[in-house]
Image (cartoon, rainbow, N blue to C red; front, side, top):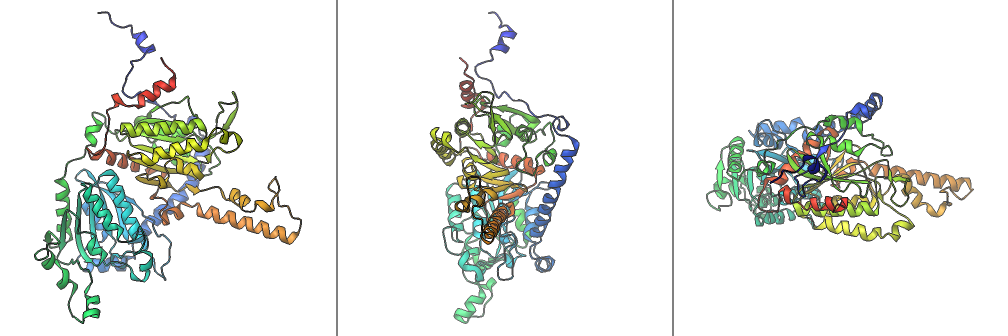
Length: 590
C-alpha cells in the first residue's frame, strides 16, 4: 500500500482532526510602547487598590470588637471557618462580596449582606460554601441576604457542586423584615433551593455552630448530614420570644440544642464539641464523595500558563472605553500556552469565536473585537467593531449552539456598544437574528460564564449572555460599565424635544437654556454614576468584581468546576465536536 505524499497531506488536511489550536498574541512591546503601557497601569492601579481596600473592609465585618466577641465564646469567625474548611494553600473565590456595599440601614450596615458565599476546594473537589457572618448582627439575614444565598445555591445547582452550609444565624434582621421576608426571592425561597438541590442529587452538608433561629433553623434541615456543636441550637422561635409569648424562662439551648435535636428529634445527625471538630467532620464527608472528573477530561494535558503573561492585561486594556485594543491579545493572556482555534474567522469579523484550554480543559470563548473592521457591503470600507451586525450575530448564535451540543463551557468576554441601528439594520432583520441568539442562550444547558471587560451596553449586553440570560457567574472588572446607553447619549434622548437635528438647544432664552443645560448635565452625571461596577455589585446586577490580573484564576476555577461532576450533561470528545462541521462549512471547503 503506497504511503501518502506528506506535502499533499499538508495541503489537504484530514477530514477530522482534534483541535487545530495555533499561537495567538504578540510580545507586548511589539504593539504597545512602554509609556502607554505604564499610563494604563497607573490609571488602573488606583481602581484595583480601591477594590482590595473594599474587599478588606467587607472581610472585617463589624470590626475587631465583634471578632473578639466571637473568639471569647471559643468560636471561629465565618471566614476563619472557610479557611479551615478549604484545602491548605488553596485560594477561595468569593462571589457577591459587595452586595449591600455602602447601603445604610437605619445607621447600620451589612458588609457582604452578612453572609460569605465562596467556591472552595475541599479534598480536591470544588464546593460552594455558604457561611453566615457571625460578626455582623450574629449572622442575621438583611435585605438581599436571601437573594445572595439563593444565587450561590443556583451556581451550585447549575454546576452540581457539593454545597456546605456553615450556619450561625439569628434569623431575619427584624427592623428590615419587610425587605427580606416576602416576595419571590424572599427568605423562604432559600428552602426551595435546598429542595431543588436535593432533588437534583447535589450533596448538601450543614454545620450548625451557634444561633440557628427561625429561617436559620430551616436552612440546614434538608441537608444530607447535619452536625451541631455544643454551643449550637436550632429553633423555630428563640428563648426571648418564648418568654414573651408564654412566660416560660428557658434557654435556647434547652429548647433546641444538640441534646434535643441529635438525640430526641433527630433533626441533626451528630454532635461535636467545637468548631474545629465540626469542620474536620465536614471535610471527611466531602472526601467520601466521588472525585472530580476534571483530570479525566484533561487527559494528558496539564494546566500551562499563557505564553504572554496575564498580569500584562492591566496595562494593555485602556480604561477609556472609547480607546481600542486588540481583543486577541486579551485571549492570548487567558488561554493555556496562548494557543487558540478561531472558528469561522471569515464571517462576522467584529466577533471572535473559538476554543482554547483553560487549566488544561477545553473552553469556548466569544469576544468583541475593538476598533474598525471590514464592511462586507462596501469592499475596502471600514466600520466600527464592538457592535453586533447581522453576520456576527448569526456566527455567535451558531457557535453558542455548537458549544452547547459539544458540552464545552462557554465564556463571553463583553466589550460591546450594542446592536447596529438604522435603516439597513432593520431591513436585514437584526431583530429576528437577535431573537435567535437570545433563544439560543436562554435554552443552553452548558455552563456559561460572562465577563464584563469594559462596556456592556444596551441589548448587546443581553445578547452576549448578560445576567438576565442566566450565566452561571457574571464577573465585572473595575473598569466595566453596565448601561442601556452612555450618559451623554441618554441626556440627548431625554431632552430630544428641546434640541435641533444637530443636538443643539433650540431656545434662545438664557434662563431656559441654562435650565436645559443643567438638566442634561444632571442626567449625564447620574447615568455615569449608575454605570459604576460598584453599583452593579451592590444591587446584585453582577456577581463579583475582579482584578484583570486575576481573571484567568477565576475562569480556571469555574471551568474546572464545570468538568468536575460527571454524568449530568453530555461532554463530547473533541473528535466528534459539531464545532468541526462549523469550521468546514464556513471555509467553503468541498
